[in-house]
Amino acid sequence: MSWLPTSLRKRYILIVAVTMVVAVSVLLAVKYFINSASDVRLAHSSLRLSVANDVHLIHKHIDDANRILDLYLLSPDEQYRTQFFTEIEAAKDLISDTVINSWVKERELVADLTSLSAEIQNYSEKIAGLMDIRADRGAMFPAISLAEETMLRTNETFTSSVNNAIDEIRLTQPIVFDDYEKFVNLRDKWRRLIMAYRIYVINRTASLPKDRLPGLLSNISLFIDNIIIDIEDNLLPMLESDEIGLETAEAIEITYEQAKIWRETFSQVKSLADSDVWRTDIPYTLKEVAPASDKNICAIRTNNSCPQPIYLG
Image (cartoon, rainbow, N blue to C red; front, top):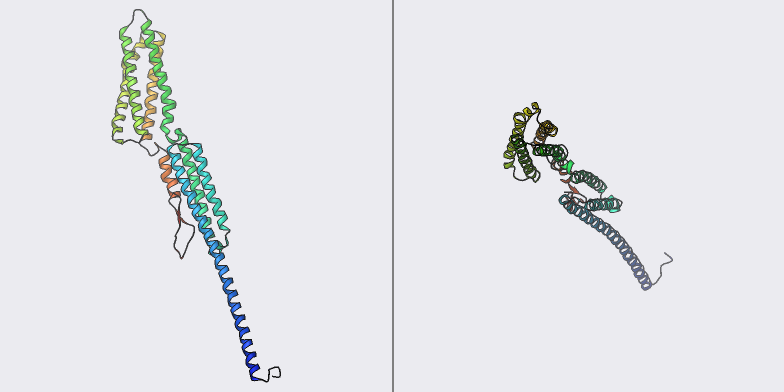
């Protein structure tokens, strides 16, 4: 090796120099790889923390949406409805942003987040249906529609006809007190019937203890049956007389017809009361909302565990 120094001292210095260069090169290479690995770990940690923060915010939006839902169910207001779906959309937007995170893709979490988004969408659709029911009293209480339409109209027609007959008899001279008393008694019976029915509706609608309901229903049935019998026994025979006025004759026919309509409608109300659709929001909640909200969606899985489950309900 002609390029090596002939002097031992110079050879030693050369060997030391080469060794130092190699050692420094190795140290620099190690430092580079350590720094690179640290940068990668730091980048991964940053991405992981970003995902964790997004999941926390998703939690928050869902929790806020459920608190707003509670307020809506207490007092249906369009403002609460809007706020609820705003929170739901914010949660879904966060999931869309999180899905494209490279850390999520590396950990194969895209499917979990996609499933979470689908569950939230399904939940919000079920809640929309519940809100529609709660906003419409007729849809929530089908019997209310019967009460406000058929039964209310029947009550007004019946009462008006009886009052017309009473006025006509009172103005006729001489007054036939027996006829007058028949219509006054009929009016009093009808008022007791309507009062009993209103008490029943209040108890049933307010979901108060049901032990009183059978007694109330029995009283109402007795009242309306007695009214119809009273008309048949005491008023219908009056139509055979030529001495009663036109208003009185018309009132007898109308009250008889309206009383039978009221009894038939009340029978429908009783059928609803005995079913699970007296309040349609309750069966809807049990059959539709509960299955959708009873979810334990895991957005981030670690070693097959779920440190941050997201509860929709």
